[in-house]
Image (cartoon, rainbow, N blue to C red; front, side):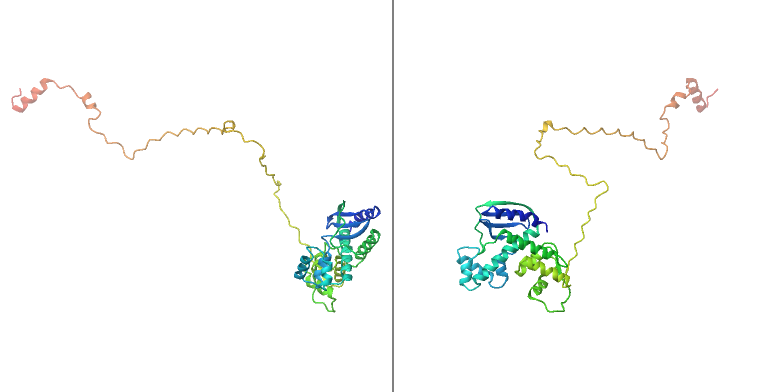
Length: 312
């Protein structure tokens, strides 16, 4: 719980300087501490229930009744007069609730991580101030005592770390707080979450969760296994994107694509092979006419003489 070492000097400095305003603490959960003349009048943090949450979760008043009182008070966030007038809580009870919320908010900020802080002047009118202001010395002593008490427990618990689960059925009787914690513990809620659900202070719930873990009434849910991401052997290539501010060149200046290569010449066609030899026509070549012997006139006359029987 290293936040205390950074928050304590800031709180002490505001008290020594008689500061009036707000000390805004950045971190997890962070918060705001309000000062008036160097005295603390209020504190709130998203890591601890405020006085209105403590009052609503206690069952003294319903959400519908609270909304009606806020409307009756003209939109005031902390309608003290209306709460007392309607009998929902006494004046002493409201003062105790505001003191509890102040100390719990400072404990939540000190138990968490403090990154930075800054003073804001003129912001000294919180919605639920305490009736009796607190000195920074007393507030820091109480916060240091609470942190040391949590760390000395057999099973120390951080308000925003462990997520307990109920274990079986308890054999011994339970206190009202133990019963509420066993009812709301689901393995996903931290001590801070359980404080908001049950309407108790973060410090009270943190201490009780640590005791119930030591007594075997609760157990911490196992951490989920890490997700393994496999990458290719060559690694992941970064995706290159075009710059959105790079101008697009006009069509005339854009590089032309290369001309396609000419197609290879087609191979010469092979003449078909005939299945049979061509039929030769007689006398088609004219060779008979060239080689034929010459016919003489005497030869013809002799032929006719034999035919007519007058040869000789």
